[in-house]
Length: 321
Ligand code: G3H
Ligand code: 13P
Ligand code: ZN
Image (cartoon, rainbow, N blue to C red; front, side, top):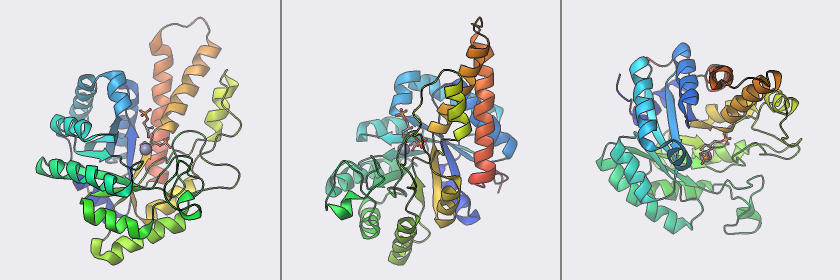
């Protein structure tokens, strides 16, 4: 089966009211785990590749690994550039056949963000590729400096609904990543903080009211940082802080129902892989065959992906809609 276009996956997900998992791929075991879990769940999937993944694994290896995955499975698979940081990188990925790219200009002033997104959209749309933009800032995004302090700052700025409308209209991006208190990594919140789901609803409504229809939103930083996994890492020699925190799965559920069509998960895969490897090595200190720790690591990632697509994103069973 060839790659499936990201645009087709989005259209079906919007219609079916489920979310697509966008899982980061850095090596063969992660890829196998994601694809095997989605195949068993009959779930469509977006494999996403960051600039760092390309540097780590070499774009050619990643491309060939994904080709291998496509040839051994029949589920729909799209390939997406995660956090593209320049027109040149986006162009490279489009030329390599990615079905979507993200151009992340969220750290730039609004007009500059618009400018670079328009440039990518223009090229992408000529080459059968769709584009994700981002507005607002995720960094340390547990508070909204945009409203408190006015203007942009390093503290994180929620996406403003009216600006989201202007941004989508001016750039022509096909989906929009929003900042609603989400952030990357394993230390997302302090205390009782969580996503601002009211802001998410307001953004979705503003886009709808502006005539942009059921416009697809993207949730970055959607790992839930499971306690049992962080505990296991520490039980077997890790030193993660006591204050690890992720997005509660109940929040993701609301985000899905509110219109987050693409949900990005990377950290949870890293944690699952690390926990399994630490456990094998701690319990078998004489072991040195990588297959002996990478196989359980792959299995743990697979179990996690299966749980996400079945119970959180609700895209199980939708591969052949
Ligand atoms: O959002 C970032 C993703 O988790 C990718 O991370 O740039 O370390 O590959 P990375
Ligand atoms: P997490 O760090 O929460 O997994 O987020 C991943 C992400 O947003 C990739 O773009
Ligand atoms: Zn991200």
